[in-house]
Length: 640
Image (tube, rainbow, N blue to C red; front, side):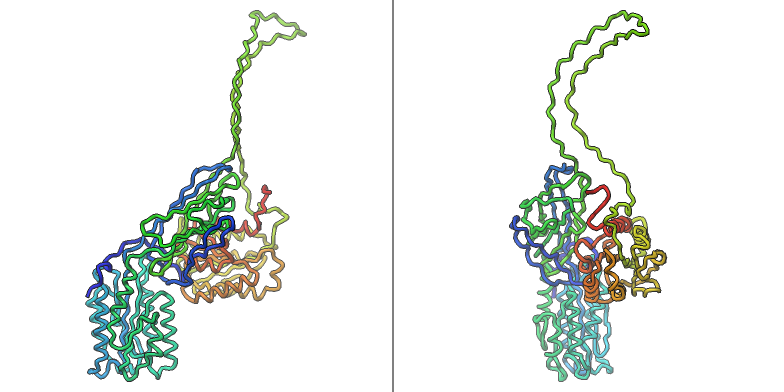
């Protein structure tokens, strides 16, 4: 049996970073200003698959005039080009019960029925259409055995199904173990450049009554799988004398239509329907969030399509956008002053939800700096007046006595010229950053630097490794603080967050230990953001009564990746506690392989999430942050 011809098609598409260990959500729309009368953006789903959408967006933008004057309005146009594959590949894990009640004695027909059904399921998948179409087989009793890893060879998968036999040690089954093993295999097969439909198909007769807590454990394992976007299908054989279908297998199916009893022929049909949903993808929702630079003024009512607008944030929504048809957002802005101005900030992003229910968020919009010139009114050009005839100069010049005054030769009076257009020239003097602050607003700062020390930080990023750039950026940040007044601490983290006194440095006014800790950081596998934030909480608990004496209390957390252990709820719980205790949380993402959605949730607000594309950009970002910390509100020398 072969899948429909549509299943044979799959477009190639570019690689993208895997987007973290939390469900992705579309950026929420903002409230519209009354004068814009903007329609509400379509509601976004509360939770979608962990696996990102296979659809990609290319962003291009243009502004006219390209070099505006301060009195001009600039017309901005952002074009979103969307591509999606024609179909999604499938990764299928078939889990066959080999316990005594199913597979023994040899004349028991239940195992043979399971094997026949499993072969039918394999026939739904067209392995020739896409090399990423893969299946694996595991057998399960009290233990789990991998009969074959994920393979593109249907003969190998069918042979693995046929080879399942009863093992005397397995009197019953424990479905939770089978699901956990299948999930491990699916996770190991995930790569950034594919977004497969992941399916676990479990055959058996339910939890063994002798295994305490089996129904609850099995339901929890299935819920974890469904939470990552995996379809869990179950087939329970009520003919077995030991069946517990209703309180185990039925509760494990991730959708009511994915549960079957006995010899139902619906399983291949249901799988085919699931695969058909991955054919001909289109966009259910496409959102563009534009966050304008601080010196750019949105011109009310100029947006097309009309955005939800609470400047500087503009949200453009495109519903049911067609693939390969560019979507265009336009609006007008007016510069607020002369000089080099940023059109938008790092927060400007594109996000989408496809017809399969998967999302992709954090797609960056190109930054653009505008050189805004002065606006000078034109002056009237006066008409030239006739040149007077020059006064004739005598040929012979008499010799002058000591008291005589010689007659000077008259000079020609030049003809008047048109008035020159005045030119504005500005001179900028380099200033040390710490010297930028006006004395009246210099503050006492309490800072904890939390630095990723995972193995991936050894990778090159620009002209240096990430860890080298991170150390240099952190040291430059410390150099901009004031010993004896400001306080700084350091928390490196990988698979653990070093205890204070054993790698982490308790916040202190003497920066010697902090500098030594930063310089001495060594990398190791693991990214435990939850443990790093727990160290910050430890400081908060110990010093809560004395933090009120500081003007700024903040943590700067820098990472180049996603948490690989711990849980997202634990990370967010710690972040909420820290922010609730009066500490501001900045998060800094380095590189492209980031869980931007999580880092934005951890940060104190949208403007508290910063991103450095490479290690070469990290130092400038930290120095800019140090200026903002020392000069809240931008109170600088030379500025009003």
